[in-house]
Length: 361
Image (cartoon, rainbow, N blue to C red; front, side, top):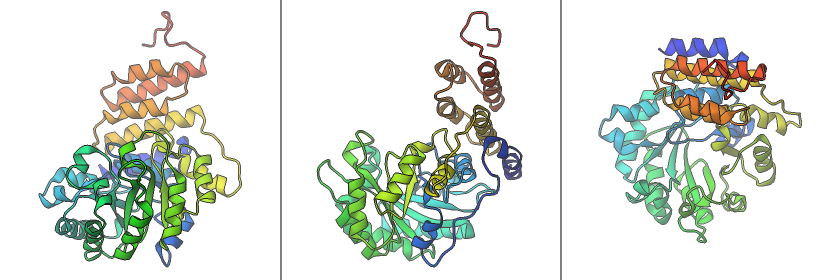
């Protein structure tokens, strides 16, 4: 299976405007120096950041890609499903693993096991103290930890006691709208030994509504001496370049801006170099979609995830709603690939697929 993944990437990345030569996370004296070499990271996203998604991001130029949120309790109770979220695919040079929970002893246990099992492929461990989802918060996990800085500091120290990789923390602006906690909380995490702080500029109570406040991110930069990674509403290379040049952050973490757009990473670094950024062609966009589908299939990741991918990759294309509707009925990798080929044919031949005379349905 793993060899198939590597071979698929090698054969198809170039036609998608991507690379099959995946660079490992940069080396350096400290994390700030490593981030400076390429400051654009792929965020952990629940239900999105699987191995195939991370591979596309790294092929698109991401300095590092994160796992989905991993429950330390799930590792404690021996769930193999939990470990599926942790293990990188063979072509991945390394991975950042994001963990969540509330019990220091479970963090120690999980960190020790992750460090042992992943070895040199583990780039860093990130503790989620930002998730606003009620089922997480009600257990005292995720953003609930913003109200318990002493407990949060214990979790950082628990991880540090069991690994030699950097331990970082992701937080939000605060729990409740109007009550900013991030700068003071970040200072407490720095004192506990965190190597960097990622700040999402929304309050937990906002969920993903409204807009991220990058002024808060800058205030955290001023509050600590460790690197700060900014997050929130980075939807284009222009957004990324603006955040990196105007807020003082050492790096940024891109989430929704990666949807159907693995090129955002290389575009961002190209823009930061003062160069013009080419947009992917129709052929490259559909090639990237087909590559993504084939990677899902080869890695035995549920092919239903391709339905979300089709909505993202097909966005803005002629008759996009029609093609999204067709994708819902796809049941296999070959179904999705045939659909992409049909879309390409219709667009390049200026055929309206919704016309009653169209026979390709």
